[in-house]
Image (cartoon, rainbow, N blue to C red; front, side, top):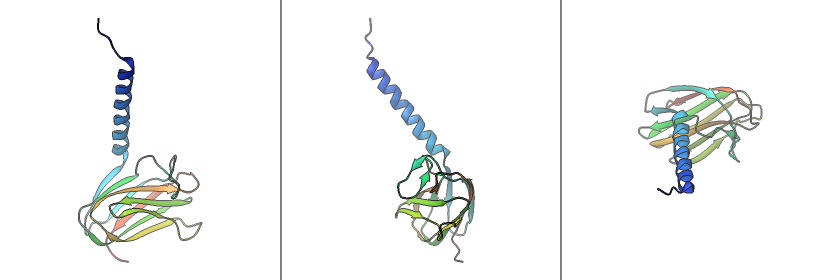
Length: 142
């Protein structure tokens, strides 16, 4: 007769489920390449169930993953949405939280030098609401 350690079977099962869920969350993010001269427009729903502590309520996984293929001397990320929006950018140069210029603002903008690498983009909401948004990325100065 073979002895089966139920604790090991349970632990292995939980590990498998955890790995599956982590892969599924990454798969949910919209992944795009960003390169010089190419404008990108994306959309989605802001907010989520995770309290980021400093940048509102965000989704468990990023709304978008951007792969910047080479350094961009200038780039801008603009989000337009309703509610109390936030823009959380987690990339090679650090983590940035962008808030609207006024409490009732519905446009967020981040601009500057874009280091080559992967950026995780979260579109959050300070009031834990959810709203449709439009996100545009450009390397052209206004």
